[in-house]
Length: 79
Image 1 (cartoon, one colour):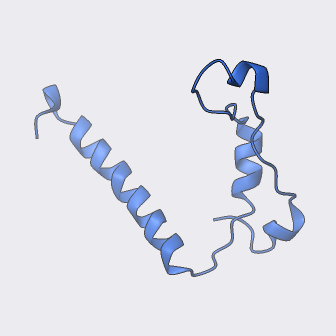
Image 2 (cartoon, rainbow, N blue to C red; image 1 turned 180 degrees about the vertical axis):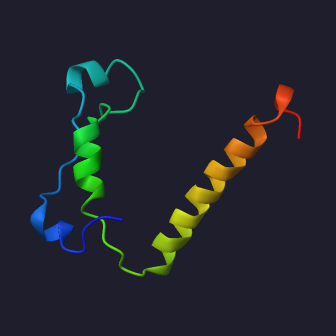
């Protein structure tokens, strides 16, 4: 969990974008992959607000990670 006051202390930053001329040639994502430092700093802005939707998203992400671990732990992908 981030700091409770992180959203006030850390400035919001968007991931870097690709050059518009380059983007006009394909349908790939306009955002470049952010650095690990940017991801961690922006994650620190998160606070435990108690919003039900946020908690549900976190719970589903944890559940998905467990399902992936469970299914990949069997030989030949058999469950």
